[in-house]
Length: 179
Image 1 (cartoon, rainbow, N blue to C red):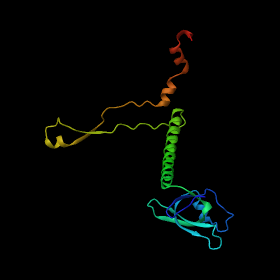
Image 2 (cartoon, rainbow, N blue to C red):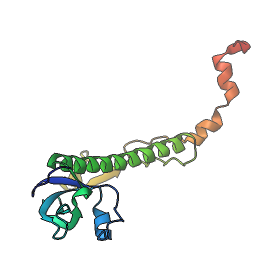
Image 3 (cartoon, one colour):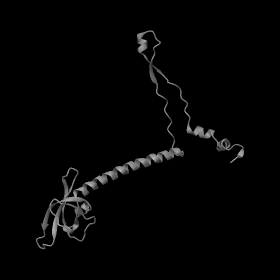
């Protein structure tokens, strides 16, 4: 077994030891986490049993939960392992968020491509405010006039599909029945 000292970084075993009579839900909640040894104490009756007090630290480095374990319940670790596991968890959470966003965008694209989702109609162009410089008075020159920039024809996807037939496309690609 490893020799532990106060201040050592340890990982609590990943499985609960329900056979130990002092094992509580608090111990189960701490399984698999990395913490720091606060204190070490020998058993008063049996000197071969060593108790280890382990504290789990928050992001600021302050202990937020503490419990006593048997020496066999902890595995020697390092601060680097603790920081790497926290960074790894954070990166995985961010990746899951981006993957969810990517799946939603892909699904929306496919729905639009296969016509399962109605396309949004494009909005009319906004009106531009223009100054009428042809006027002779200063007041009328400063007055803003609303005019359309230009009229745009909106072609809807449904209209395009209804105007095109597959036979016409085939005949333009392969004239006179040539394959």
